[in-house]
Length: 344
Image (tube, rainbow, N blue to C red; front, side, top):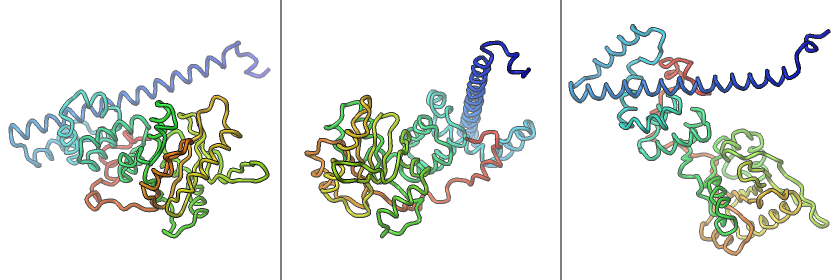
């Protein structure tokens, strides 16, 4: 008789429930450990700031403090002179403990180091810290989003959502847009054609989804719509899990033209009739062009009743010279802080 035949009724269900409880406890423990570590680093940084102000501590004192702490706690990896200076900068950036407890302590220490190095504006640091929590960004993703100016590009597309969608849906739909979209992971020249652009995005679908943002689920490329006696093909079709609607993306390797909006209007009407479930929200269209004249785009959408957004794309966007080389390498940080604090 197999061992499974001897198990009492309900055992498998109990086992699955206990597994989920243990995994949840492990996650809470990990978050708690990180929170305590960040709060510890903040308190150490605050003490260093106070001593420097009151007793004129210099760099040599910080170096000595690092050596003494490493001798006292040889199993801890975070007491290098560089990391103590990060602690000081962290405390200087966030003098109020309330923000540290409610926001900064909810992201890994590495993330906080990235915010200190990459951003000099307090408002930007707060925005990206909260976004990292909301979207669960890893450290590398956080770096990418900062370097690609995620905050400036978010919600910046020309749209008619406010007029064509209900208020909760229209606000969220606007938030999921970007302008421009950055496709700097594509090795294409500026004269790339639409099919080359589409093929490249599909070849790098994971990076493309990262650029689109949280909530996009890929459905198909060149999706066939049979309307009347003719076939029509949508460049890229997605479904947005939070908006609960289809998102039609039309790629144009040229400047925006008013007739593009008419074509998108047709696509959305067909998708709503042929694909949309009765519980789905109205489908949304995104026209992503090489360039656009904002005034022409606004005129093209003025009397259009289908929800459409218009954005540009960039194949490459260089880092500002002021930011190059500021962030320590991953190897340097890991050597100082240890692998246990890595973000996953």
